[in-house]
Image 1: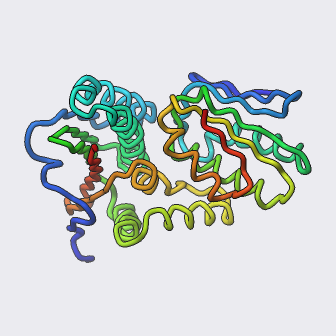
Image 2 (image 1 turned 90 degrees about the vertical axis):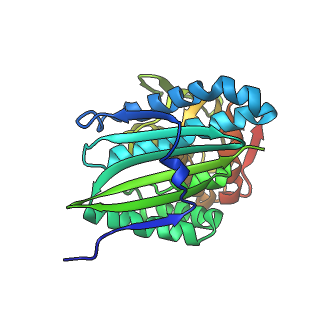
Length: 183
Length: 115
């Protein structure tokens, strides 16, 4: 019996799961539909548009671009690596920070692999890791995943990421959080 | 030559050796990108000692799998040695201002203009 997988890594914040937020769940059984990721991303960016324009001034467009890109990547990951279980998304704008979290369940072996990937990201220099990853993809040819989604949220949009892993019987609940400071 | 999907189009103009992208590209991984990748690969191979252009201005969204495909082809162009790559983007399209700059890290000779 392996040790339970419970951990928080990187810039994880409890705010991602508490308090008032836009909250959307993709029901179990619907969560393998790829196109939902893009549609959700467009919806979330549209949802915050007016508020961002009122509070973020010149940075509103950057913040909206972050939401569109990050939500799509995070939900794509949940669709790709989840077990068809429910996917939950939370998004909130608090002061000068945008927080987005996406939660789902994955089988233990996939969760372990994901954990080692995010530990590397949390400990390293995202731009260096992105450059290495792209060169490695070029050398090794197409693989299951490009591995660029999370890294590019950090390098291209200037956001920070955090993760929480919670063991649930055979599966592991994984939450990924992205935080953008708007200024 | 072109690849057309639900909400995107990638077409190559033989006259100018330019690939033009439009719409939204959020396909699922390298497998789904394969037809586009083959089209762009062919454009590159036809211009071993010449130049080719990607016009991305009308491409509103691109997910990380698509970005990875473009970066891979840029690296391939670098390795081919004599290809002159030109990429045109738009400041109006948010992801382009964020992600296109990396292309010159992978191929320092690449000519990038974000208009």
